[in-house]
Image (tube, rainbow, N blue to C red; front, side):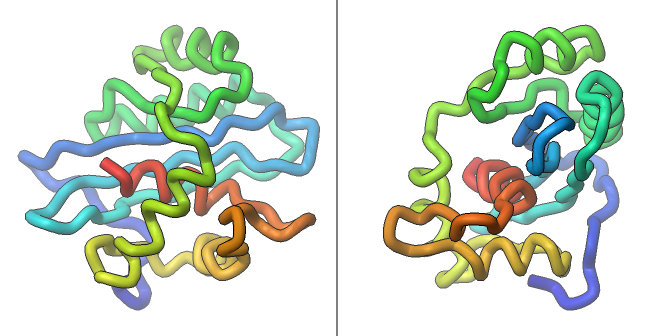
Length: 160
């Protein structure tokens, strides 16, 4: 983590990757996106943004698609939450949406060694860091009542 860096700016010639942790807008979960790039041997998190409930999911998809376009991300991976609706929403906004091949737990298990070996560079975002600390190593799921929306989007984006 680079202290004080909450979001990185777009760099020319860099290929960016995006991930979506979708939510309905009416529950307790946020809708979150992560954008990252590869820098040599390290994966660098550039953006981690979440929209807390209540929100209009179509409006958030439109905003997220604009953010992806700003970083030249034309295809985003996402969890399997409402994949038809989410894929259709992103498609209408020019972004191809593909379901992730990994489960959330698999993604978290893969991230821990990367953090410990400093193979990833995180953002200095309190919500993201709090969610990372809340992960329970047994099963690698967040504690009951603790949200993992930011960390889910960031983790998948960093597993390029």
